[in-house]
Amino acid sequence: QAGISGLGGAGFPTSNKLSPRADQPISTLIINGAECEPYITADDVLMRERATELILGIDILAHILQPKNVLIAIEDNKPEAISAMQQAAQARDYHVVKIPTIYPSGGERQLIQILTGQEVRAGQIPAQQGIVCQNIGTVLAVHDAVIKGKPLISRITTLTGQALQTPMNVECLIGTPVHELLAF
Image 1 (cartoon, rainbow, N blue to C red):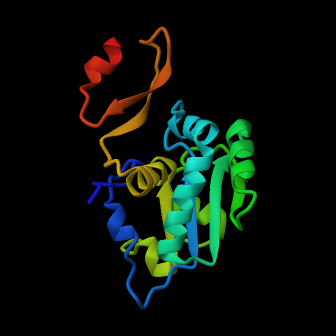
Image 2: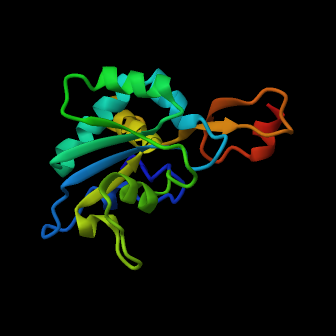
């Protein structure tokens, strides 16, 4: 009802991921804190600045899926994010896992293989192997929808590149034209 779709890039409807088939229980919930592309820092900023809200969002996902394991994967070049998430998760049985900063480790299938050693075969989805993966931005959107009653209307976006004098992260409305963000 809040329009939550995956913010990791594919835009897959989150409600589908949170509704696995009854004969395919979820054993592992992976929270993807690895940026999907070089130079992007939106997830890093969210983990450093909103770790407590992210943990509450993970609580919601864990309540829905009832996994045995919750893994929060963060690239090893983000020490502040790792520290913030470890501190926020202290009272939970969640595992913050440092992964190597190697492109494309932020891809869902690559991340699953790094963390579990399992390969998601072509034509399959991770849920068929008992795994659900959610991006950091999606976790925050779930938190905001359930706790604040806020639909997914904005997201943190990285503005970067040689054309910009001041690279930065901004919270922008979904659908904001790129030329307006670049002008900003």
